[in-house]
Image 1 (tube, one colour):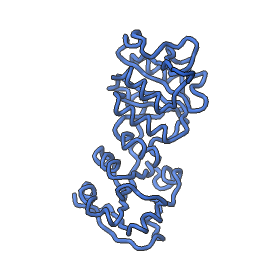
Image 2 (cartoon, helix red, strand yellow):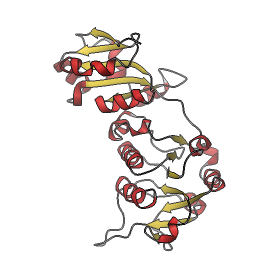
Image 3 (cartoon, one colour):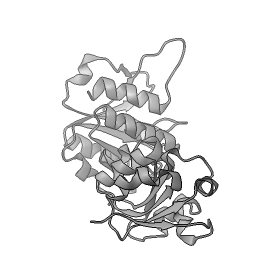
Image 4 (cartoon, one colour):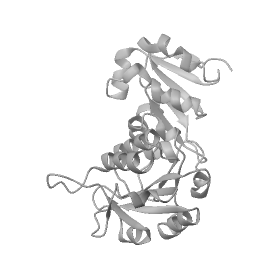
Length: 274
């Protein structure tokens, strides 16, 4: 395998640059490739994680000032993959912001996995219902990877982990932690029933009257645990709450009732997944 083909560009009007700055997330996901679609990874670290996890590159975009420092990553791609190089000022104009370490990569979206598939070797699972903010999704994945989650299950309406900002906030962990999106007809009851069939205790992170403190020793008696997190505004739906085994809470001080899901998931993973 040779290094990506270096192509110096001077015009921002080149249509080959559309994928990096002029297409919406919907177009990237659905319009370019009926089979898989495209994602855009930003920064050297995220691109390297994706490449080493086998995500296939379509094209690179490199700041001219960072070309030499990016050669080792470009060497991980085949010589049929173009690496478009822009002068620094043009790079900033195209992306609309100062790009960290001057590197973008358009990549094929990895094959979607099924819920049963990602549960095969899992003992600790995060289940996420209807998160809207892609930054929260990315932050949850980063905590999941760092603090012991083996898999993540998303509700049918949860925000896309592979959208550009989520990938960036996750620091590439969306490529490391196996995840699957539940089918609409299976959410939530059949999905949670499958978790129980696989031996999981299904625990809702919810402010319910009978919720147990997250440090209650009885929560550690089951070997397999699934933690369920709700949306930013409304928390878990009644259907999801009813399908869980029990509710747990993080005890709070100073009259604070809850934490942002990115923070609460990190605390919960540390307590129940390590």
